[in-house]
Length: 118
Image (tube, rainbow, N blue to C red; front, side, top):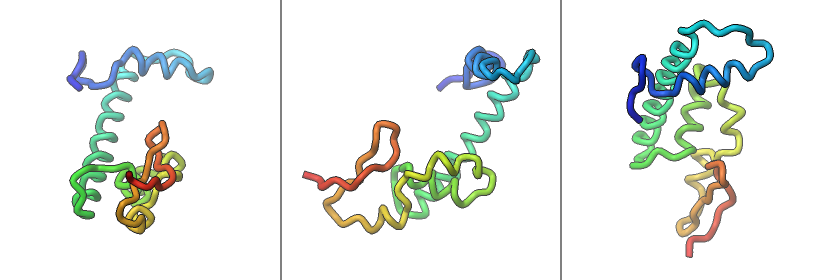
């Protein structure tokens, strides 16, 4: 994803539209979507970096949803995301799945029921 005007990755017009969709939000200053875009970018960078470190510590080569969950559950900074990862398979549960069984994912990328790999 390349950078856009103002050095942001996320589209400012879409952020402004989301902000305006809230009835409690009145006028929006010109710099507010830019600030929010940069804050979102930095927060995601931190989440991805820390999740990659969890994956590396677990010996995984691919960052999986369970690595994000462990990172979110461990760091107080990401407490607001805990409700979004409740259905993701825990690291211990994922490691307890017998060999030859693949844990599927729902359409939203959340861990599903174990499925026998054929």
